[in-house]
Length: 309
Ligand code: SF4
Ligand code: SF4
Ligand code: SF4
Image 1 (cartoon, rainbow, N blue to C red):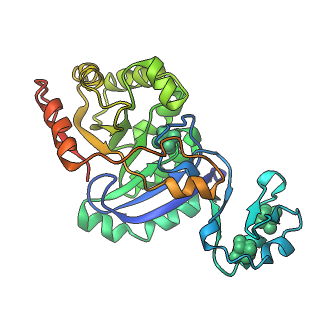
Image 2 (image 1 turned 180 degrees about the horizontal axis):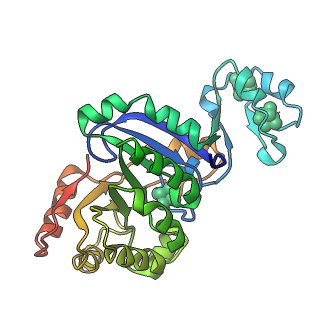
Image 3 (image 1 turned 30 degrees about the vertical axis):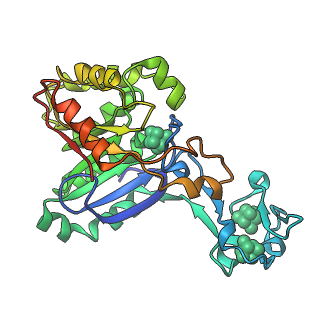
């Protein structure tokens, strides 16, 4: 038996209906080479376990100040609690003793076998709903050996497998996991590399190289392109048209989903002690989303375009 693979798992969500066909178990891994300005899972970006402090839940009891052997907690002049993560050993004593559940831990190390055991508990749902397992992130290709091991075991058991990715990874990582996939979801943030770098911290050359190389594989692999629609940042006519022009020749692309901008992760930035870059940006209206969807459909594309909901 091969030695167990390990990964930092952010969370495992059961019976999801948003990340592929049917009912799915979604395994979110930590670690991402991008830092999208709109990222709604900032707790998925670092490839390590992290602590969050929800100040609005804290009643200033100071138990954490007493329990932390590394003096990570202090109280501010106004009595509110502060967390300095630099000396944290992740002993989790504070998480376990906080009476208000104001301290959360993001991520835990798990083996492939532990994750497969969790997945296997829901096998009955997959078969009755034509669902399966989706591996997501962060950027799950950053832990490709682990992903390969989980996907391979799923396929051995006849479980449908999907992957959500930015495709920002070495081709070797993709080569490990793609043979064990039944479908692939690719997020495309911007067609222009310079703007992509401004918005996400990295250029997009490797993403497009990987997408084109994937398309040339003999393997049958339906690909869904997902475009996060961020008002004023990547939703212009020019960018959508150019993205479509680059996607249209690809044989494996089955559909395009527009992912409406939302603000669900904003509170998590505060819990992590980070600033949210798009503080003043509001989610687009349903009318505006429909207009963008119609715009793409009007570009003479054979690829179906929908708004993910
Ligand atoms: S133990 Fe929890 S509620 Fe008490 S001060 Fe610390 S964070 Fe706040
Ligand atoms: S996890 Fe342990 S070391 Fe880190 S802040 Fe909490 S009590 Fe302190
Ligand atoms: S690729 Fe996804 S997880 Fe990574 S920073 Fe962008 S939105 Fe966040």
